[in-house]
Image 1 (cartoon, rainbow, N blue to C red):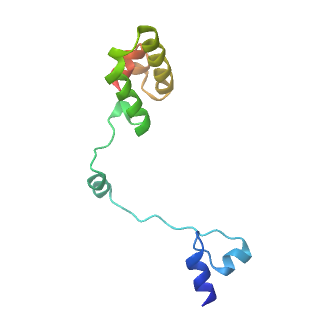
Image 2: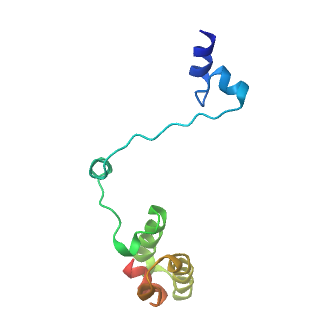
Length: 107
């Protein structure tokens, strides 16, 4: 009974023996077919040019493009340069060759 209580209270679901031996509890992830996963999250996979960008990076690019008209030219160029430098190492060579704002537009 004590062992059951310890494993229920433990944040890692460890038994008393796990604590004594210093082991870790490993759980296998439940397999979810890709079609079910996509249906559950309601989005399609990333397109080829943005496949290696995180959701946060995609959002940064989207925000920049939506707001760039209201940004002073020097600041706009600086932001585009910083964003493009962050994305450029992970895109294809043809995209990497584009100027900063063109690259962001293509992403």
